[in-house]
Image (cartoon, rainbow, N blue to C red; front, side, top):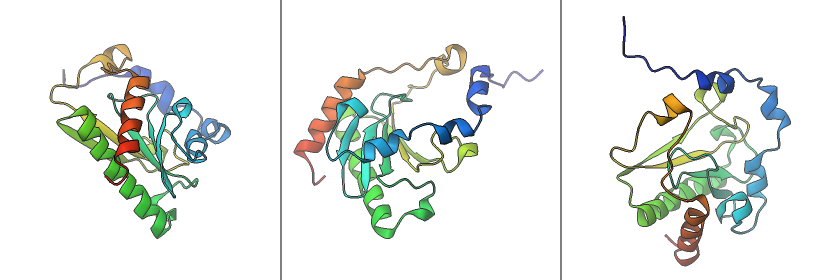
Length: 170
């Protein structure tokens, strides 16, 4: 018997859902990209000409940020040079904000292209920036369909937006 498997049956409802569900839903990244400034209601912490930075409402860890082009684009190849540059510059600034404010031991930075890769919003490209601390992984996600987040979402939003407001050139 192989005891090296972790079972997460709760993921089945996510991976088996009808892909038409996402098409019919409003794109929260487009909504965030329409903002011209920080907005706690939709967790926007920064807006640039072509990119928006927001806190992930369902984070893998405290301070989990998303960076997306303001224009609805599903694939990185659809971005203009200016959009790509602005998104990547926004990723750099977001990592700097996380490192300055939360002092993680590292960060995961990733883009999931398409639903099969794990993209929760396959129609709108976005970059995940997930702060990580040594020893922060546990079995709560697998065994209890629960993530342990050590910080309050509103407080994290205030800290990150304050950082962006005072260090715009970072």
